[in-house]
Amino acid sequence: MAPPQKCSSGATAAEFTEEQEALVMKSWSVMKKNAAELGLKFFLRVFEIAPSASRMFSFLRDSQVPLEKNPKLKTHAMSVFVMTCESAAQLRKAGKVTVRETTLKKLGATHLKYGVVNEHFEVVRFALLDTIKEAVPDMWCPEMKNAWAEAYNQLVAAIQEEMKPLPSA
Amino acid sequence: MAPPQKCSSGATAAEFTEEQEALVMKSWSVMKKNAAELGLKFFLRVFEIAPSASRMFSFLRDSQVPLEKNPKLKTHAMSVFVMTCESAAQLRKAGKVTVRETTLKKLGATHLKYGVVNEHFEVVRFALLDTIKEAVPDMWCPEMKNAWAEAYNQLVAAIQEEMKPLPSA
Image (cartoon, rainbow over all chains, first blue to last red; front, side, top):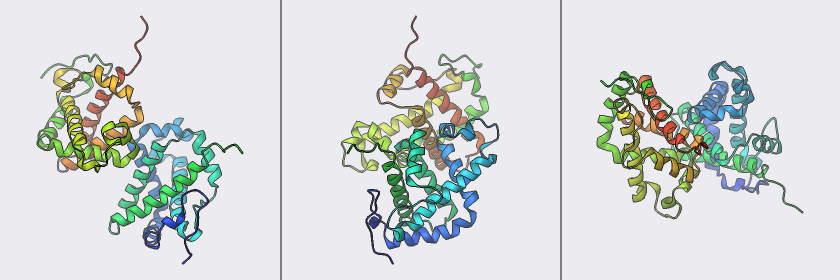
């Protein structure tokens, strides 16, 4: 098991315990087989809570297709869901927040461009935890919820770090 | 049964059918006995989804008491829950959105003052519907959800109407 390491993003991966990692791994190993379906459920839950958030996505703004049938949403939702879960699964071993298929810098720039604020990240966290709870009801418990919330919070902190203007030298 | 009437708030109460009224009345008659408990659940659900929203309430900002034990939150939550439900229950008969213990003008001014935006009203709608669903699971159905959502939307439209700057004469 890798020792706790400092994370470059301000949040420290040291706060993510072995027990939390085990709970994330256990549930992710079940969920990853249904990543496409769960990713879509995750995003549909976000839009159920906050319908106006769908206007942030160009491929939803101009579409007449129902959300649950929109192929671009399906692709995007799966990609975000897998990225979020893998970031959690790798958090302790990597010793820092890592993302697949992109960089934290790019994620920061995109979220800044589309005007994402803290309240959006909060709604997405609720939707993520609710999606996981429904995906693995038999293993769901307060500790598992806390583990996923902690991993998500560290991912968000790392993205928000890249959304800040650079301090002048 | 009162005939459909124009509502002064832009939304028309005519859109609220007898069937919707009956569904609201049926569930509200069960819930009103537990209004204090359900009101608190409703607000705790809002803060579970959007923790930062609690900072909008002065009596929560400066308090060390856990949310669920805060007496001011309990009082406020019950009052808002009852006001929201009674507004729905009276919508068809009154022929317009009405509120108890205050006026739409005051509600508009307060929501404007505290910077409430559409996204906040969306999260509160989700929390309200979820609270009612859990309160009356045996009678919950898509039609009942739509009835409560419609009544809530008309209440929000009436409040938002009072949040707009007055057009110059």
